[in-house]
Image (tube, rainbow, N blue to C red; front, side):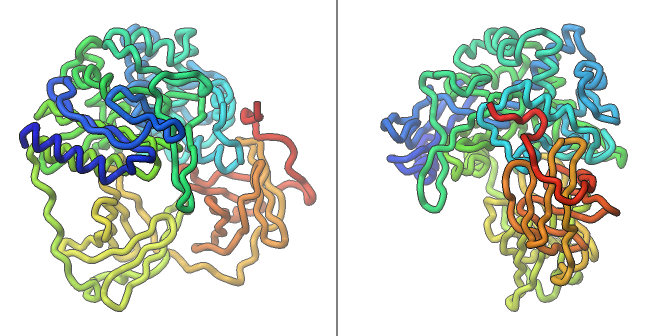
Amino acid sequence: MDNEALAQLLAQLVALSADPSGPGLAVGIYHGGTLTAHAEAGLASVEFGVPIDEDTRFDIASMSKQFAATAVLLLARDGLIDLEDDIRSHLPELRLTTPVTIAQCLQHTGGLPEWLQLTELTGRPLTRITQNQTLEFVAGLATLNFTPGSSFNYSNTGYVLAASLVHRVTGRTLGEFAAERIFAPLGMHRTLFREDSRAVLSEFAYGYETVADHLQRADSEECAVGDGGLVTSLSELGAWFRFLRDGDALGDDIRDTLVDSTPTFPDGSVGPYAYGIYHADLGGERAIGHAGAVAGYRSHLYYLPDSDLGVVVLANHSAVRPTVIATKVARHAAGIPEPTDPTLVDGRDAAAPAGGWWIMRGADESVRTQPQPDGTLTLSGFQSGHFRLADDGWWYGDDRDEGLQLLIDDDRLRLRIDMRPGRDLTFERCAAPDPSAAPPIGSYLSPELGTLVIIEPDGRFRIGLDLVGRIEPGPDCTFSAGQASVRRDGDDVLLGAFGVDGMRFVRQPDGTVIVGAPRGLERL
């Protein structure tokens, strides 16, 4: 596709994704590390009517992970750490009972529970939470979701530990270290880790979200970084693509380790995620990159090595779908045909029973599938959608851009989300909720979080500082409580959520009440 056609495509895509009077996005195409085409729509500040342009800086959320990983790799090259070091050898306050290597922290293979999920459950907003507070909170975690190196589960915890590692080893924050060792050599002088959410940044886009058809501010106010927190713009990222191409400025050894260090699991399979970089296939062409999502911001970066082509989407509205946009742009720019739609068949002829309840062991997340009279299938629960059966045996979601697919194989259900780093999610067929099941009334304390779960006789469920909601019977002898699930285990209960597998809460004397904030999460 020629440059004029690409420019028209970009203009159309951004126009469809943003209202001129609301928040918006910036999309860029890079060849040889040079920004060759870009388009912007919407406002960096709705309140003041400031338009977005190629110099507008955005919080790029988890797209930041490749930069944090690069900082750790520089420490390894300096001889200050080894990637196979147990993270506890550098952060001895961690109470983990099983060794987790630095490499496993960066590859999401360490089994670390998701700290962001835990802070939300315990009722502590991320407003102004600092790196030291985050480390204190995470330091209390003792148990893992799985044996390190045996599986993959995307967890931001490993990357906030990486930021703390840089600080502990060098005496400088990740932001200070990255400014000197990454951004200065690359010439990215307006790119930084935002370690103080109160800092005034020129040409910075405010974040927004739409709730019940009303636009509202949703700026990320987290001051802990590593898992996110990088601020950059289209005009700054050309230098990063030159590094991804050949290691420019930082070294090809750093580049090769960053990009190519995908893990091999005990079953011999190779994971798609290296160090802050995931691998994908776009119509037979290799693609590497990362997406990002945090309150008020969305992002996606692709680099296609065979074409030396880069694509970036940066947005300051939570409704924007940057992965969809980036994929369309990359395909057109590289001349990759759109994928062919699957050949649909009548779902009433499916070999395996399609209806029922399914549960993800550990996290106890559940879904329900319900066949429809027309041969389609609906999914509800952890994920939701409407699906049609194809001749390859997979059920495909009607929203093809969302990329949801289901495979039902007797008593197992596999859920695939296109472009999601990691493996398919696996659910097992299980018993339906029992409406007569009595919840485990009582007070329960987590030794790891230092916070209580309280289940009241009237069905109210409390955890940490906030009332989560009501507890109701769930599938497979569980109980659902807002974002969490609860399972009896003797006198105790196990709390599960996506990224948190069966965290134990120990039964306390009747009448125990919540006092104070969870450890490490005291409000400032």
